[in-house]
Structures are given as C-alpha cells and as structure tokens.
Image (cartoon, one colour):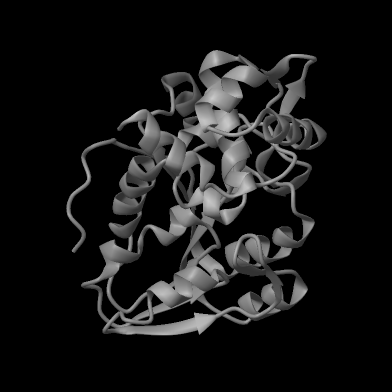
Amino acid sequence: MSVEETLTRTTSLIPEQRRQKIIEHLRTAEVLSYRQITELLGISQMTARRDVATLAKEGRVEATQGGAVAVPTARLLAEPHRSVKEVADLPSKAAIAREAAKLVGDSMTIYLDAGTTVQAIRPYLQERQDLTVVSNDLATIAAFLDHPSVDLICVGGRVDRDNQSTIGRLASLTLAELSLDIAFLSSSSWDVQRGITTPVEAKIDPKRAAMASASQSVLLTDSGKFGRYAKYRVAPLDGLTTIISDSGLGDEAASQVGALGINLIRAEFGDEESAE
C-alpha cells in the first residue's frame, strides 16, 4: 500500500478508531512523539495532541511533553467502540468462531452475547437446522435474519449505542426465563485471579443470567485480552464449562487455566475452514 493510500485510510477514521491506532503503534514502539503520530496517521499535530490527551484521561496511555508512552498497567478502564472492534483481530475471531461452532448441534437453543468475537460464529452455523438463537447484540440479530432455519429471540433492555447491544436489568430478566443449551459469552478482560471482568456495571447481570440459564457456559475471547482486568467482576473462570481462545495464548497461561478444571481450546491461526 502506498503512502498516499495509507494516509487516505487513516485520515478517514473516526476519532476512536484513530486513537486505537495510536495504542496499536505503542504496543510495539512503546514511545511515540507527536511528530511520529502525525506521520503515521496523516493528521495534524493539534489532532494528535487532542487524541493523546483523551487517551491519557481514559488511562490508556501516558501523555508526555513530546508525545505518548504505553501504559504498563493491565487495567481496562473503558471498552473500545464497536467500530474499532469490528476491524480488530479478524484472524483470531475467525479461528475462535470456527471452534465454537463445533459445539453447536441441530435444534439447540444458544445465547450469543454481545460482541464481535461471538458474532463471528454466524457463517459457521449456516447449515444448522432448527436452531433457536438468543442474543442481546443488535448486529448479531441482524446477521441471522437471513438464516433459513433459525428462531430468533432478541433480548430487550437499555441500548448501549456504542456497542449496539442491550444491557441492564431488563435484559437479565428475559434471560432468566429461558432454558439455554449453551451460552457463548464475550469479555474484553479476563484472568485467572479475577475471572471475567467488565468496566460496564450494566453488563454484569445479563452475563450472569445467561450463565445461570445455560447447561454450558463458553467464553470466546482472544489471547490479547488475557491478563487484563476491569472494575467489575462478572464470574470466576471456574464457573465456565469451556474457554475458546487462540493459539497466541501462551503455555503458562494455558496451564493456569487448565488447573481450574476448565476445558481450554486454543484455536490455530490460519487454519480456518471455509464457512459451512
């Protein structure tokens, strides 16, 4: 891709996507000057300073006089906007989704938690018959509208516009009235000590209600989220039946998870079969 094409793509990004790009560059560079940020993203120095100030306020980077420094902490203060999630870690999501779909049989009732990793399961369920799909994710519901053999249940509740999902007590009340075969859960942060966590309090009850209503609870999450934690605890890892992550999850982390008696699947990158 030429420099001109790169600049065209980055300058057309919305602010949250642009800030996510800064964080991604900091993962490898650790320190970026404002000049480097302007060159990498094709933006003005004023915009670069404003983006760094916003990220620093959210605790996602440290602002310095000359630029930005990567934050060493594993704490997740806020979840990225859905538009950022939709274009991130696509090979990992596809690998995880392929493995998750293998757990789903005909005539099952499954819950698909809000999130782009869980939504990625959609093409792998094309040939399943007589499924009931329950979801609080508006984009996931829309993705299943053209499925030839699915009964859809959209979980109501307060709408989280940034993530296009329903959250809160009303969502949890609906889930409590259902009997689920599998609840596929999402999380932007998880570790052995704290389990599944979230920075959004209103997401706690729906996740817990789904787990309580399901025969199996399966966490779908990429390896980059392991070791991170947020303010609110949702559930310990040993409350899960299975965790499906990707092959980027190291052996030490896998050993820690396995010691809890949880079935852990590490999906291989680049080994995605075509969707059914």
